[in-house]
Length: 369
Image (cartoon, rainbow, N blue to C red; front, side, top):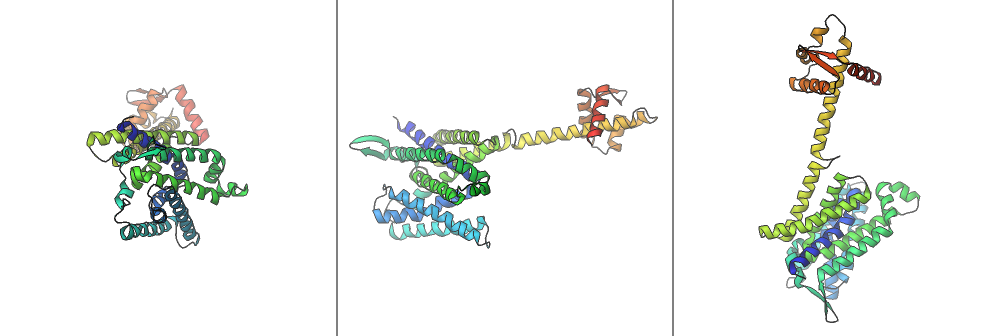
């Protein structure tokens, strides 16, 4: 397998592993918690390294997961005091733990490949050179093997505890009443986030971990309100970010991790603009159409009120509408054009006349009002 293909496989596996727990972080409005965890687990990694003396030790993942859960516990403890809101609690806990990790690295691990840049940015291009060999057999890039195991664990945990996660996410009170212990479920989710974050550190760095945990699920949320479809779209968007970011990096001769984060941002922006229900552009079109429909209905009611009266020719003239209804010229033209196109009115000599269908529509609108 070529190095290019291995890098893309690692990018895909990392993106999918991050997107799955990221869906529940976004739905629980805890997206910033992923940022806090991805940085705050640094002291856990450092302490585990000091104890084992091995950067490849699985105890680093255990230490990171423990620090991630500690981060959530500290944030919750501060929030429950009522003196701080969650964002302020995150803003206190995460810099404190991250800075502790930075100090430990600078003071005791300066000559070891555990520098802050590696943790923050990673280097996906070097991942194929770090091989996992078991019994003399080359299994593949260590990052690919580790993240594949973490992805399998994430899929297994989300499948086993799907009902508990859904209840905790959408109705914590009901989950608590049914004995599902939402706090334990939340800590379990944060543990999975911590393990995923530390597993992806070496390959893509913490910044990309945050981008892949938040951007694809947030983009998917704009396209659908169905959980399974949201998870599927988040996985697809993550894969697009991974592969697209790799080829963008080759084209620009830039950082792969940075390019992946950029593509994830582009996917979110496209979703933000184009998503059919919640996208910015469809909302603009929908509101404009609703405004024209309202104007058309008001026009029909106005014509019905003046139909058959002596002043009907003046009140029902196109030029009089702008003064009488205080409509701008452009909006009045659009309302009249819409009513004519739908067969509700006829225009003769600049005067509007209701058709039978327009009269029925106006009467129905009056009843509804």
